[in-house]
Image (cartoon, rainbow, N blue to C red):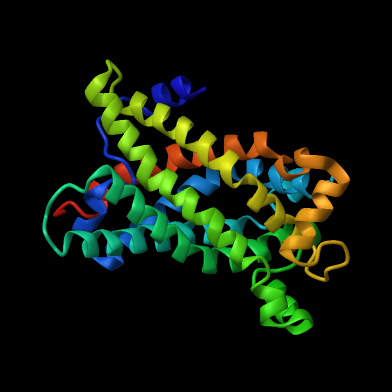
Length: 286
C-alpha cells in the first residue's frame, strides 16, 4: 500500500511535517501550515474515520455517501484546527527548548516537545470531535449541533465531555506524528538504502501502529462517551471503561483498531507529504 502511495506521489526529496524545521516559522505560519496540511489530509481519508467511530460504538456501517460524508466539514475543521494547534504548540515548545538558538533538536527534545504540543491540542480537538461524532450519528448543522449540545447539556457535561481522555490520546499521537515519525525517517535515510519518501512511508507506518495501539483504549472510551452525550449508557470515564470490559472483555477497548491504524497511517503520511508540498510554496523565504 505505502509503496503504491509513494510511487503515485513521486520521489522528490521532502522534510517531515514535524522535525525541528517548525521552529523556523512564525507562530502564524505554523498554524496556517498545520491547518492546510490537516484539511487536505482529511479530505482524502475521512471514510476511515467514520467506519472507526461506528465500529467502536457498535453501530452498523453504512456505505451511502450521504451518510459516510456526514460531518465532513467539522472533521476538516477538527483535523485542520487540531493540526494547526499541534504545529503551533510544538513549534513554540521547540523555541523554548532551544532558547532561540538555530540548532537541530535532539531526538528526545523533538519527541518531548511533540508530546507537550499534543497535550495542549487535546482541548479544542475534544470539542470538535464531539460535534463531529454527534453529526455522524444524528445529522445536524455545523453551528446548530454545538448549540444544541450546549443548551441541553451545558459546557462541562456537554461540549467538554471526554476532554481528559482526548488530551491523553493527542499527546501520544502528536509525539508519534511530529516526533517519532521524522526521527525514524532521518535514521532510515541515513542507515538504509531507502529514499526520503520510502523512509517517510516506513516511519509513518511504524509510528501509526505504535500510537494507534497504545492510545486506542482512550480513543474508544472517548468515542463512546461523545456518542452518548445524554449519558444513557456511557457516563464517566471510569464507568465507561468498566462497562466495555464487562460487555466485551479487553477486546472491547480495541474495537475499530484496524480502521484506526489505517486512518492514522494515512494521516501521518498525508500530513507530512502535504506539509512538504505546501511549506516551500507558501513560505519560500524560510
